[in-house]
Image (cartoon, rainbow, N blue to C red; front, side, top):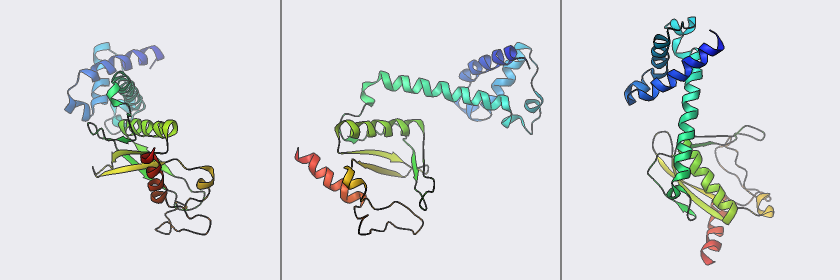
Length: 201
């Protein structure tokens, strides 16, 4: 497929996808949009799209999915920027209109990788929360949920340089946080201490 034909096909497929019902979007929406666009434009499709065994994971379908995701993200960010009510106004952020999914996977051992995964609204809420703590300190709280819709509150504390090097290590390999002579400051203790400071000012 020529680059020009590919671009026209993807552009039309995005338009068709936008016109689909919510149910159709979930059920092979990108593949359906590509097939309809190809039919309208009288454009041939690559073999991996034609083959039902590989169609859903074909390069063309995946590229369309990425473009749709990018457009959706841009639209949501514009919506948030236009709506001043979504900005964090104080240290407790409890806007519950949208599902803010956030998962944090700690290191199992030193030098291991840690992961943070969230949906767009979860990342935006986290960004607002961190921005508030950076600009106003010393604490912030935000309401999030896990993928099974269990709610939890994320508590963020700003540590001083001397506090930061004394924090209890976060490794999960041994099943619990262990304090030592040096690493003796637990996160909940620091948060409560900083909250007392915030409430007294």
